[in-house]
Image (spheres, rainbow, N blue to C red):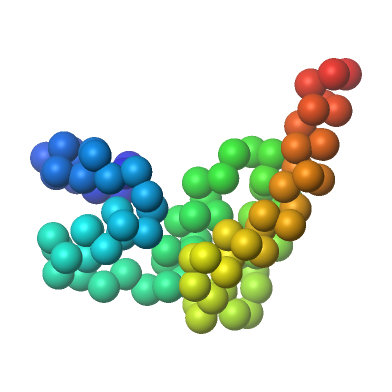
Length: 92
């Protein structure tokens, strides 16, 4: 939502699903966003605990061809590790 101009924010505010939001933005502004840009934006939106994984994935060769669902599913594998890191850092 941060990338949407302020005057258009209310039109898209009710959309909670990222995929549907992207489709609505493309339809509204008649602009196609590259798959790599979508994936890069997803990686940049992750919380700081994900920084190590986000840097690795930003440099993957196939990031421009991987759809957002595949990227999400690949990142989901690391969730227990990331959650473990964040809980151990908060307990020290």
